[in-house]
Image 1 (cartoon, rainbow, N blue to C red):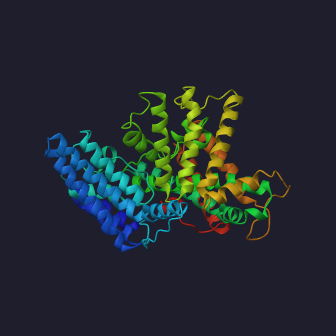
Image 2 (cartoon, rainbow, N blue to C red):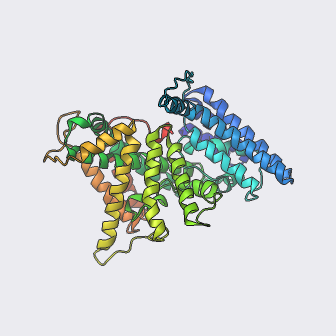
Image 3 (tube, rainbow, N blue to C red):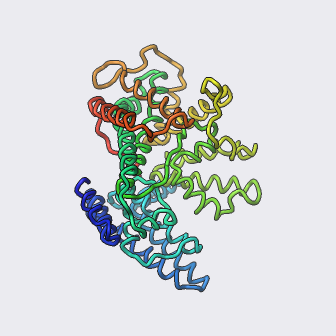
Length: 471
């Protein structure tokens, strides 16, 4: 990346050359996994660029709608074949087997292209917004290709809207030292979350979820909470790194997480978790279905559809659909008491810089409910998730609940990192501190500390890929 950085900014007077540089780097980055996957992203790019141009000149309503559906069918068709074909085929065969009908069908041996769910939704947002006249179609094919394939967020988001990111490829970019320093800070903070927390606790979580029948309830509860931190630090860590790298190249990506584990109910949680995806479903699925307008029954239907599709988006397994369905069920009580849009502001603190007892109770109860739902997200099957919960509910607790599988010693520094992380998140969420220090010397000290933590994290954990790469 240093070479790319130098070449890119040496072309600062040539916008087209900078965009070509980004496209080539992005294709090289993506093709590194498997060069054959490039054909899919290039296909989506060409399809939506062409349809966008046609929508810009077509005035006939029926033909415009046909163009929109062409984009939707092609993009979701590619996603469906590579990600969901075998899943739906196996489900179909299993369903008919219950009636005594034995169906012989051949599954496809396909490798899931990395990030296909992310860039498919990103490029679809362009076509949909052009169709609704929220965005003028671009005539710059290079800029559009850079928008679709932008390497910092290509494989795991954030899922950027064309209305927000595409215009940044169409205007001159000037190197800004302050933004570059802030980008490095975001990268370091993201690496701390990934390396020192998510990767550090990954071996323990894998062991607990694999051998859950051998452990007491206290260990399973520990594993459940550890996974809550692993998936958050893994995914948020990537999002921070993506935002940081984008800043180095003069771009601003959206904030994808807004301290979700300090939410006071499920509705607030989903306004702060994977924001780019939740707002995508809100704007392109929930609102077109009618949103909260109409009868209460239709609103419930719309919420159920969004959460079930959201679960399926994460993976071709009924565990993800169940995970989405559980969140829909947790959301519904708030709908009946008209509580869905409350508590979205910053926590109110007392003179001891602590939230109220009511807020503490709501935060802890929401975190526990979310953590319980994560069991289905983490499990390989619904049966495994149910058995895990059943073992967890035996309530056989032990003083030393778990020993690290690597050295047969109780977990130590990983807990220290998690507790420190919770404290820092709390201070950031309540705006008592800011990630960008105005004091140069404090900034240097913080950066040095982050580097030290990252180095320490590499010594105690496993080197694992980002969880959301599989989606």
